[in-house]
Image (cartoon, rainbow, N blue to C red; front, side):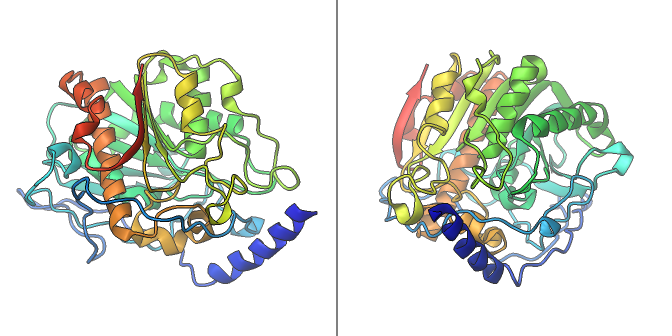
Length: 396
């Protein structure tokens, strides 16, 4: 009874909170000639989020309401998914770096563009982050978003990774609160897309994609789906980076959603290198109280992924931030209660640092695992170089 009352209350809040959301499609970025940057899609006055020093302290919880449902007609389909109107950050890699270079944007400008579902047979909408003028074989990373999130929510840290010489592809799934795909069904669709991508990405980018050095990443439910993909095909990728992955069922699944068993209840089949970035406030519930409504609940978060994966593996819990604090500040309003329901930081500066920190850790991890640069393993294992407070750092 309590769940039904809470659900109806939060559904009403969600409807009011989302009444002004826009669904205009972003246009692809285009390169300019010579050494100039990719053409801007939208002007942006926001900060690029360079990390500050480690003297900044975490702040208090600001979690609000639990995640809520949308009407089925408002949810995206696999074949027809449009992105909300959003700005792609304008980032200049030539800006002076006063931190460890990993935690600043890399040497490459990044061309960001979308490819529609059905284009050349693509099974789904996807976004590409291509390092401009990158030469040689360029490793590829596929990123999968969280439950009910959009690929446009993660531009900042995915651009950060791409600027260091990686082609990053983020694909859009169709999520529903009622009668939606289980993560097993979604994993089959994502795996089919990855197989298509390996044959067709070369037709969309000027760089040369290197799928012999291919990595996977995912946030929240995207981590769970990626784990299922790796269990079905352990050789599909060399390495896996989970961004606050969650292995629990969808919200309210007890009475309006499909049953979706934990993926870690099955033995992990992947033998490549893995890394999991958790958040201190992810396990906090509504208002930061207890575990009720937590976005990354205890027993189903990064702690459990790390415990289940074989060596070599890495686990870091970032202090003072929550499950949605890596979402681009430009997209928080669009994300609405799917972001604000998660306990997290109220400090915009800390969130900006965390986004940069996430991009830097991914860069170090994929430099080590996809480019074979052993010196980056030392960075991963040395928290003294991190420009961010950590609650836990462990390796095996």
